[in-house]
Image 1: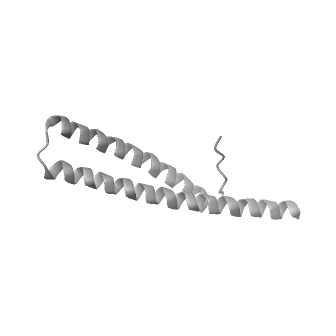
Image 2 (image 1 turned 30 degrees about the vertical axis):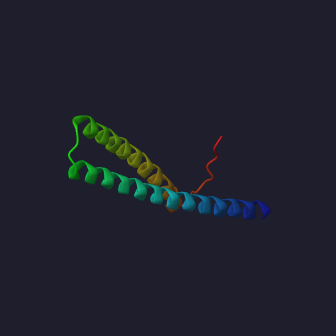
Image 3 (image 1 turned 120 degrees about the horizontal axis):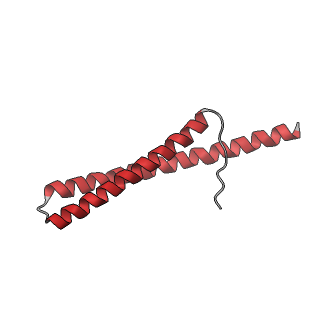
Length: 92
């Protein structure tokens, strides 16, 4: 019975941890999308040289790749929570 309680406790801790991670990822993605909107507005509202446009395009592409990677991570975390299989992620 003790082992069952320990496992339940571990699952609850893991679920809280993953829920917190999901919230943090959602906030981070929202902030990056705002930055992306800012880049778009800056690109369309001012007269820019070719080099400046290229720099903004590079920043936009990097943001898009970062957002896609974070979206994948968020999807994986939410999927594990929905399946009832949360786990604590150990960082070495």
